[in-house]
Amino acid sequence: MKVRFQDVRCSLDAGRRRLDLAFTVENRSGETWSPDGIHLGWQLFDPDSDLFIAEGEWHRLPRAIGAGERGVFELSVELPPEKGRYHVYVSLLGREHGWFYARGAEFLLVECTVAEGRASLTECRPATVAGLRRRRLGGALGKALHYPFRTILENRSLIRSMVRRDIASRYRGSIGDAAWTVLNPLLLMATYFFVFGIVLRTRFGGDPSRAGFALYFLAGMLPWLPFAEAAGRAPGIVLEYRSFVKKLVFPIEILPVNLAIAGLVTQAFAVAVFAVFLLVSRDAIPLTALWLPALVAPQFLFTLGIAWLLAAAGVFVRDLGQVIGYLLTLWFFLTPICYPEASLPAAAVPVLSHNPVYILVSGFRACLLEGTPPAVGPLVELWLVAGAVFVLGHAFFYRLRRSFADVL
Image 1 (cartoon, helix red, strand yellow):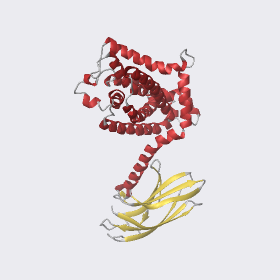
Image 2 (cartoon, one colour):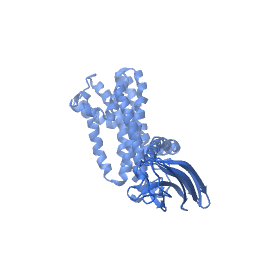
Image 3 (cartoon, one colour):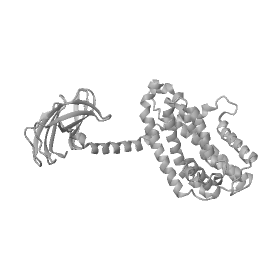
Image 4 (cartoon, rainbow, N blue to C red):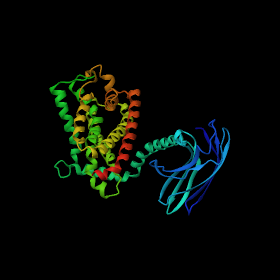
């Protein structure tokens, strides 16, 4: 159905919430519109949810309009008194074909807002359903890219305070107190080193010594520790702060952010310890260590995206905390952290090499032990995957958060 709306004039009586429209409709369909078969009408929609609200009276055409001819129309629409934004679709319709706009034809779109019993006009223009979808998609993409960073920036003081309190309270009352922030990763790495380096005598080809294994193993653990810590705690984080969800106006989307940043703090201590080991065993830290920020940044984005996904899903699937513990163990052993990459089956390498943690482990070892920058191809892939997971994770959490209070 080819239709063209032209010469549009729109006026609004704000107090009475009444729209008065005048326009010309050109028949570009190649068929004659008869007054008995074609009508003019309008429908009212909620632009946020795209839900139908109301429909106006159908108006017959004043006369038959042939192909290439135009008809002049006037129409009045009364907006509802309820506060909100509204879209008015003014369109032709036929008894056989239904609403023309639903079949891709042009219609007249009027965007209005009602507040305190008065209406205001935002826009009045010809449009198509496909054009509106492209516009919504562009707006959604813009919000998806903008909202996660805005969340972090607007709540940075609260995030800093909660991360500090989380780290301080995690070991409060214990003999080691805050020292456990360093001791925990050290003991974990020492356990794996004993099993793989001493008992199983695993070695890396570049350095077959026991000290070489320790360095390669520890370099692989550096990106794994903050990721595993955040992902392991994420499924239960909203449940842990359920009182914030039900009783307070609180930006709950920052809870996974706290986990990701706390993981970075743990990583910072681990990197400091690793630097000491590196200086003792090799007498120097390579300049390629300056590439670490290019790895830590996508690591943080990927970790936070996964944390948002798991935190939202954990509200509805209470067993997720147990399941993710198993999955993290499987993920750890599928990543060449405690064994060389050459030990992987040749058929599995093309698949497993796309694992973001695999890329991080290889990048950390290249920067800190091999004196080379990370490979460009995998690094670009890491940034793309991390960015996508970051955006999708926030969108998933943001969409489900309205339902948290009902479930909790």
